[in-house]
Picture 1 (tube, helix red, strand yellow):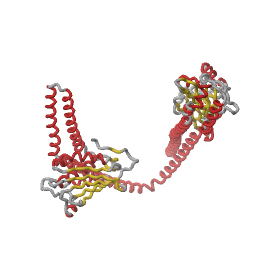
Picture 2 (cartoon, one colour):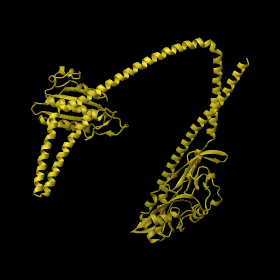
Picture 3 (tube, one colour):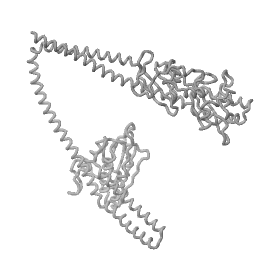
Picture 4 (cartoon, helix red, strand yellow):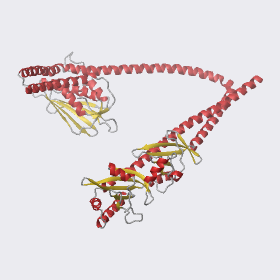
Length: 602
């Protein structure tokens, strides 16, 4: 009895330890997952805020340059006279402010004195005030443009100042300035409940959804920085030396935590170029901790329930032993049957793989057969330029002996053209015969495929006195298929047309390609002998051929149709009016959402 009691105590302790371990592991995993989600949310906020800030600035970046081109502004800066000239400039700036939505627009002379402003007739007018001490004025005078965020020394309202140098007759006559109010961004953050802020290059937050962040430095400011800010009067009227720093590290990395107002926040930042600003965003971690704790508690409760079920199982195991043994026998039989089925599936997969390899071999063999059918024409196509090249080089040698440099250059250029012609022919043949992989469905430039096929078959057609022409619609859509496969299809059909037209007077083959409804229709029409209805009915039967014994295996059209059906295409034959046969290929249009169109190599 004591031994049984000790066994129960050990099991109870093991259960308790397991519950604690599961709860701790679940809490830890949940915390990691929720922290990752929180970091993603912070990054999303930063991305949205960054786009908002950049778009707000870019919306007004052009304004100073446009203002500086207006004749009224140029006349005012050149004359620096009041009266009607100044009135025209002021009313122009006031009208532009109303149309553009800028906070204020004004113009300074080369000394930084404001000559005209959009608020010329309002309280706090900029007219008559000097802003030569402002960095945006100095930057515009030196570099042509400037940008600066500061609190207005006249109005006391903060804003982002964009400036542009005004040049007339080759000399600088003043600076145009646009002031942008960025406070709507802070209002948006506040309405959304976001703890976000924007700090300048010195680490001072000048825009924030929480007013308690405004004009607080991220880290303590040095004496030199405070002195420079005072000279610039960037935050005029604000005691930065007394502002309490947020106490953030020099570099805010992923996972930085901020203790603020009795809560812990997950904080991240992003630099904004070229201003050098730092965009901040933080979300509270209290929901993360609460959900992680709740998840850990649920896991502990589920573990306790599992242990309770396990204890019930142990009490009833004597009754269920027989059922378990029967289940074990049944599972063994199922496992044996499963292994047998797996073996059968594997055998089928192997058979399918062998079938695919056989099909690929047949397709490649069909390519080689097509090359064999064209061998004489190919040899002629290559040997003719070779003979011409020999004669051309001999002529170049004679010209060189006569020191006729111009003739040598002309003759060598002709030789190079002959060599390029042979290279182009060999390249087409190598591309056609070398690649065997079918590849996925792609957007095929059918016009380029037809041109490549026609160029390969043209030597044979020319040797047999057959005129081969191609007529492709200029707005032909992209087809769904594989460029290499389709090239083999068209070469096979063209070779059949050439053989059917051989010996005919005025033999001709016409290739056309058109858009038709939701598909592409390609027709290869020959003026050959045509075919009977009985022959057309058996055209696609394997090993059926109308050629003499030994000339063909009768697999060409069967393989051609198989290649088209891989991508949903069709192939049909019909009599041609006036004699001959029309081979009609239908191809589906490739959806534009997929990959870009693939062109056949030349």
